[in-house]
Image 1: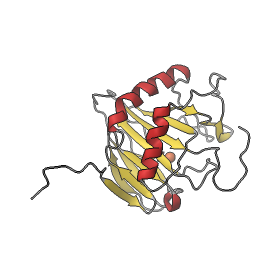
Image 2: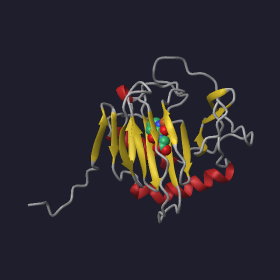
Image 3: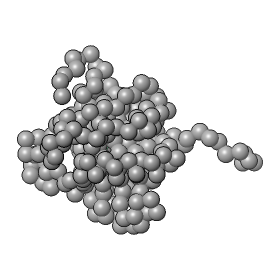
Length: 224
Ligand code: MD6
Ligand code: FE
């Protein structure tokens, strides 16, 4: 007989060794997160970055934290200032930090202290081709990824671009955490299907929290 008391534990789906999907983990924080995204975008507006190869990315991005991830014809890098405005990125709201470290702990990565939150905004049709996240100094620390708004199909591949990729549906409030042996896996997002979400309208947001310049690998911490 099914229990009358639903379990309070988050359903955990294992994507691979070192990678989990925490279904609904951010649901209680979703409204605050979306409000904070809008506040961040007032200071550091969403923009379509250009890859070093000259391609305009279909996903619009901004950042908050000590550093932000940027791309231009020189390459990919973390920068302490927003090249668009010359200003420092908005600070990481404490509520973001708390959620990210709670999610990392739930996934088996204690003491996660992100210094960067990359904010991705997807319109219908926007996609992210298979890539590795390899610009961070801390290769031990995980990445915590929060999905908000319209559902998307997440591609989760192997350690080479040509390895087959599994597909996972990621929905409003889901949190993926990757680290350890999964940290350098290729991943991406299929073109966003059109739809309407009560919290975001015709959009999907994704937050990825990283230890980008803070270092826990034994390498020296540099100036940013
Ligand atoms: C996205 N996410 O879900 C894009 N990277 O919109 C990522 O590229 C990503 O979700 C590293 C770890 C988790 C991620
Ligand atoms: Fe990524």
